[in-house]
Length: 233
Image 1 (cartoon, rainbow, N blue to C red):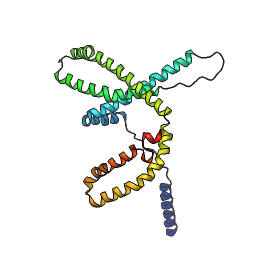
Image 2 (tube, rainbow, N blue to C red):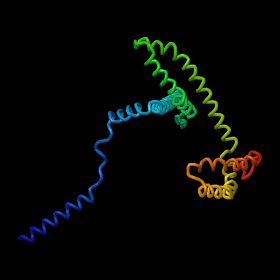
Image 3 (cartoon, rainbow, N blue to C red):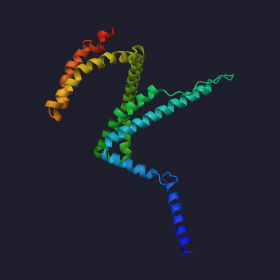
Image 4 (cartoon, rainbow, N blue to C red):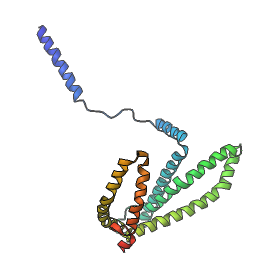
């Protein structure tokens, strides 16, 4: 009877171990709460105020532009709904506007607002109402003018860059020029890197290789390896 009980106890232990091994992994039942995310964001604001505001402004501006263009496209499709059952074009997002708003929001608007509100909190009126009036009547109008100017410049440059990128066949020319350039680079850079590593200290690596790149850049600009305009024309 005793041996039977020992055998049963051993068997029960093996079943428990097997159940633990093959127990499915469950997702974390306690995901990060919104309050924890907010706390982390506040810590970033305290540690990196300008960078955090720039990234936030870029993301929020891009999202707002994408949402606005999507809703505008959806309304246009609904208003121009054909009488027959032709397939409607899908709602489109104006990515030129999205990138324009993101660049303006992150690089231009966020730094201006950061330093302006810092100055206003320190040197502005003590009354919140007066601070709002100063902000809205003195600063916001020129900021809006600046925003529209920047957006028009960004849109024009992005569209021009896209047009030139397509017309100039940038990818095709880059691929055709990369082959000869890689072969020529193997005739120059392995020796430059080898002697740099052998005879110089690590702190001088970048400076030495930058000096070597003067000769390499001059060679490419002259048309060597297909890197110059003269070689592509």
